[in-house]
Length: 126
Image 1: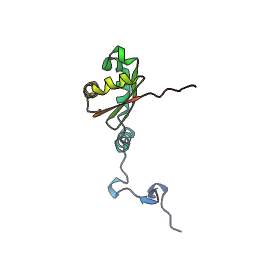
Image 2 (image 1 turned 30 degrees about the vertical axis):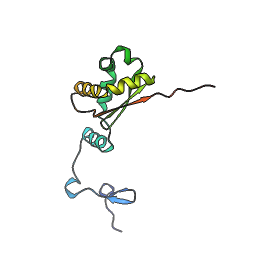
Image 3 (image 1 turned 120 degrees about the horizontal axis):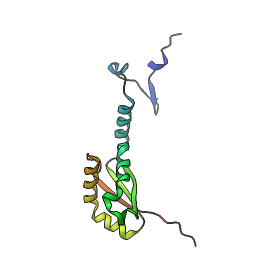
Image 4 (image 1 turned 180 degrees about the horizontal axis):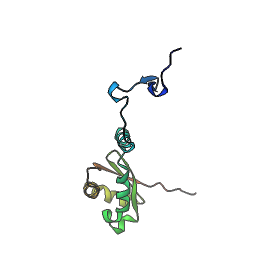
């Protein structure tokens, strides 16, 4: 019986065999490069972007607002900010363009193109 080495077998994704191109078969990729490629493919922000924005949140929005809003996530180039109060949400929506520009300046790249504000859900006890 003819067999191939396990590493040479094509991978299967949703029933479709995927085999690397002949030139890529023996190419070594760094883990960081592979993770960056995966993040771009999935539409995720660089891992340090969330950390940078979270650590400098008070600097970005000011001390009054930093207590009632927070970075929830970054998906692709969309910054999602969670707020506790609908009035704060409205205020931040008016400032979204400035917030995106300040976030990009802080990160040193165009990490944020859009800002989405969401109001935190509160559990109601009746």
